[in-house]
Amino acid sequence: MQRLRNLREDHDLTQQQVAELLGTSQTMYARYERGASELPIRHLVTLCRYYKVSADVVLGLEGGRKKLR
Image 1: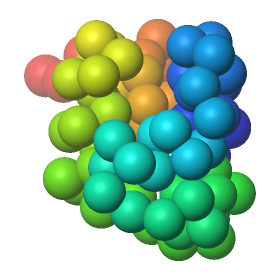
Image 2: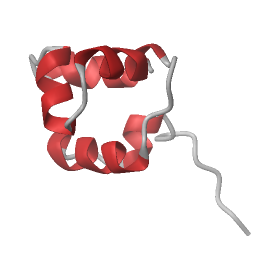
Image 3: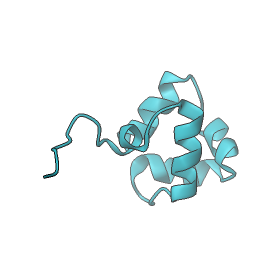
Image 4: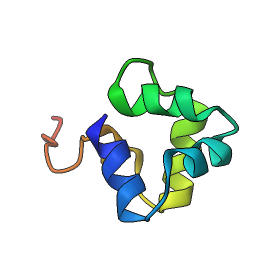
């Protein structure tokens, strides 16, 4: 997921640093960034809190909302 990489790079972090924050390996985190593995919800929540963004930002849903009737 390009958004994960962008957020990480915007905060001047390495994959290893983010992996440590999540309690996982650098290799597994790299798989999340590439989209080779799905990001667990617990990691999504941790990243949202750390970066102070909504899940919509991480998931790429911001700006494309339609109103439900």
